[in-house]
Image (tube, rainbow, N blue to C red; front, top):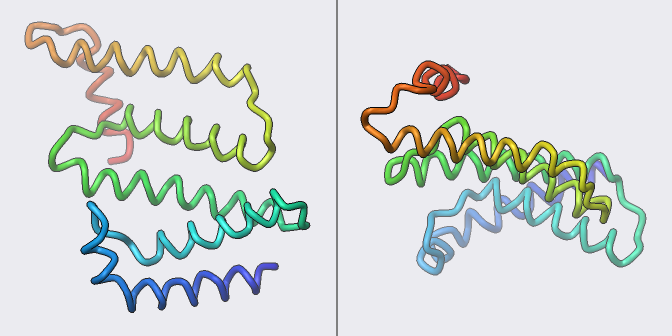
Length: 151
């Protein structure tokens, strides 16, 4: 299965590169040939799984995880110049992306995940509200540390 996946990514990559100019004219944001290739590969794998074929689940999960990370990085580079993408928003994206991928692969939504997703979302909203107040000093140091988590 790994060989088939590697072939799929490679072929899709070159096809997307050949038609990239046309695709970029049709789509509102520039595309990444590698991102489309990986996503296209896990999409056909997911369809095979849905139709009852045996696939390599860890390989599917790896590819879907790559897409979550790829979308996050693409968002940071495309959206960040216009909006402030913080480390906290990145964390939210990864948490929700992981939850979505888990659901797509297993077909199970674990309600216990809400015990993480809801408080973290509330915390991020709280931080963004305190940021909008110019006189707010609460959480300033924490916000600074969180914003530079990957530096």
